[in-house]
Amino acid sequence: MPETLLQKHYKYLWTRFVIMAVGIWLMVTPVTFNQHLLWTNLNDIILGILLIILGMLSLSPTRLWAPFAVAGLGVWLQFAPLIFWAPTAVNYLNDTSCGAIVILLSIIIPGTPGGKEPLGNEIPPGWSYNPSSWSQRLPVIAMAFFAWMSARYMAAYQLGYIDHIWDPVFHNGTLRVITSDLSKSFPISDAGLGALIYTMEVLMGFKGRTRRWYTMPWMVLLFGIMVIPAGFVSILLIMLQPLIVGYWCFWCLFTAVCMLVMIALSIDEVIAVLLFLADVKKNKGPFWKIFWKGGEQVPYPEIPYKHETILHSFYEMKAGVTFPWNLIVSVLLGGILMFGPSSLSPLFSDIDHVVGALVATIAFIAMAEPARAFRFVNIPLAIIILVCSFVFREYFLFHFFWSLILIAVCLSRGKILQKYGNWDRFIF
Image 1 (spheres, rainbow, N blue to C red):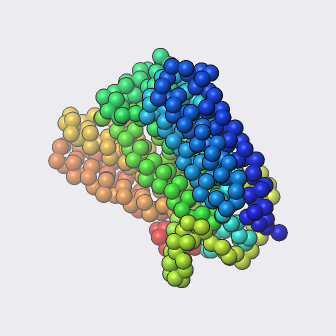
Image 2: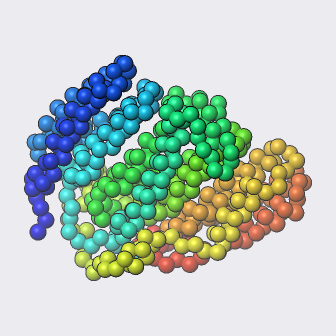
Image 3: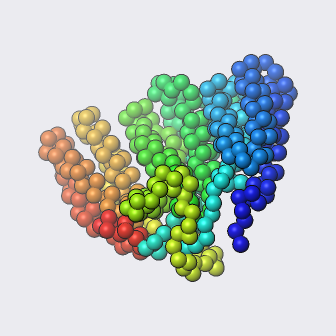
């Protein structure tokens, strides 16, 4: 029998007291460790007071806005050390840790205030697996965590907490990238900003149960925006570092690989939410109410769906992603163009690098079965290189055959193992 909202509130009442304790900790820490840092100390003291007040207000089950306000303060605690360029590692670590704890205790562990979890089938209609299952989400959370560690390491150097940064592949490449004019053009540490985003992605990955595609569409779409379009742009900027900065950065490339995996594994859940909202719109349901609060009725008839073995969990972990030979070849072709022979013309060399980065990125994302048609974007990119090979006449045979091979391998769809309901018609 499902618990009522009031029972759920009192079950997690302890989180409100811990939030108040975090507020007290924030007020005391500046006096203990950072006695001469005016703005950062003032920020911590004010936020500590606000957390105590809002934590007390959150004790009431009727003040549904209070936990969201607490979460907002948690986000600011993540951001404040970057705004104030926190001069000590203690201040940076204290604020970001307290911010993550506050977000976790306000809306992640207790769930969204007023939210409901209907009974019923976990799998979207017409699908063969659940894109919101923990087996699907845990690899995304893990990749975001690895990216966070990489970004935080670079941020530690930019903020002045360490005086050396190790690059195991490109010698001083990482150092040159994070101290470049482009990096310094940001008003805050760009690596620190990346660490903040990855922190939010980790926390949002834990948000919601295995029906969150149905119960909280707004959150899944927000998570998808942070991971997919924002991640895609970040990956391209990282791939273009040799053109923009003149050097490669190992930790940046490591982060890009993590983001690529996250994108491929997150697309299916976003599509499940879009299909659900399209169905609501088609049936003239209360669109915005469902968008913010989710469905309230049993979504679909219960279908036997059990995680009985570890093997099944590992199988579901990669559900929705396959590795067709033609996409693997496309990724290799993109890498060959990026790292292949440099053309005599600087312009053509730059085109090679940009197109190669795009081809490899697009092919990897297209390994996600719902995004398989995305591979066709590589065909116009191949045509660009084909045209350039006639215009520049540099390494003509290399570029000519590269273009033809890429176009040929893009024509094959590859094997599709899962079902995606109404989305199946867009997989071609």
